[in-house]
Figure 1 (tube, rainbow, N blue to C red):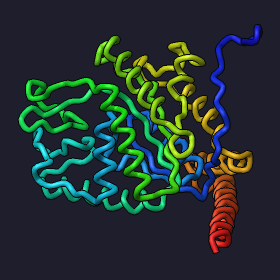
Figure 2 (figure 1 turned 180 degrees about the vertical axis):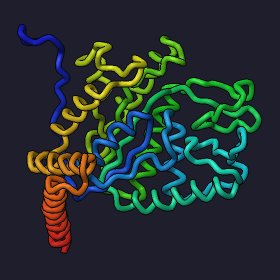
Figure 3 (figure 1 turned 90 degrees about the vertical axis):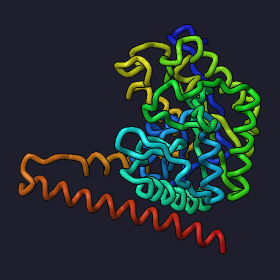
Amino acid sequence: MNKNSFFTEIKIPQSPFAITHKDNILLFGSCFTDEIGAKLSQNGFNILKNPFGILYNPKSIEQCIYRIAKRDYFEAKDTVKSGEYYYLFSAHGDFRGLTQEECLSQINQSIDNAHTFLKKSNVVIITLGTAWTYWYKDNNYLMGNCHKIDSKLIERKLLTNGDISEAIINISKIISDINPTIRIIFTLSPVRHWREGFRDNAVSKARLYDAIYQNTDNKQVFYFPSYDIVMDELRDYRFYAKDLLHVGDVAVDYIWQKFSEVYFSPKTMEINDKFVKLYQMKNHRPFNPQSEGFKKHLQKIKSLEEELNTYMQNLKSNILHNNE
């Protein structure tokens, strides 16, 4: 450690493959997936994020990916009613309906969309959040979300190291079977699941970390150390959100910077900056939409859009040419 340094820096090896704007990126996992997915989207990448909504444990993510790969649709028996809505045991509460048919239509359409996207994806990013799982006692159904169901009806179980390793191996095989050239990046969420208890959270993260460590080959399955960066480089509560459990914006920006350095070329990062600039320009709210200044602002947006569209078209043309 350099005597002038005030923290231990995580040295991350350069990735053996680069991610570019021609790639399709599919993301699964915990709420940290939303943070990274938002960054990728703002930087101009074509992504599909959490087709079943936010999922935390590896077994639920495995089941989600299996259904997508096999186009294994949900049926009425997979739903549960809580309050006035029908939900799905295996999906986030975003998938709900006043009738079973409405609920099932949403999720099965998402399966179709994700299946198509997976087949043409280049990279899958999977963020594991917890090794704790919840099971509906009545039929021993693994729940991706509890949907505020009476806790007396639910059994809580901690996955073993073997359970988690099996899930990671199955996930990698399911994905590679449908798309042999895809790259899979696992990461461990730095979000602290404090409701599980401080000790249960620590054990949970340790088991996930160990299973990921055992099952990455650095050929097709890789690990990106989001968790390590927060635990070792950013070990200070100022890098967390107000709840002191989720990581704050500064930490997300720092992790994104590290991710960029590992997976993006200088040219890709240059294009990223332009996409972010375009995103910010489009979200600018004018005081006077009829002013000359705002009209010039709109013209700048149009010019930058045309520049980026031309870049993307050329990128795709090069792909087509290389594949001929």
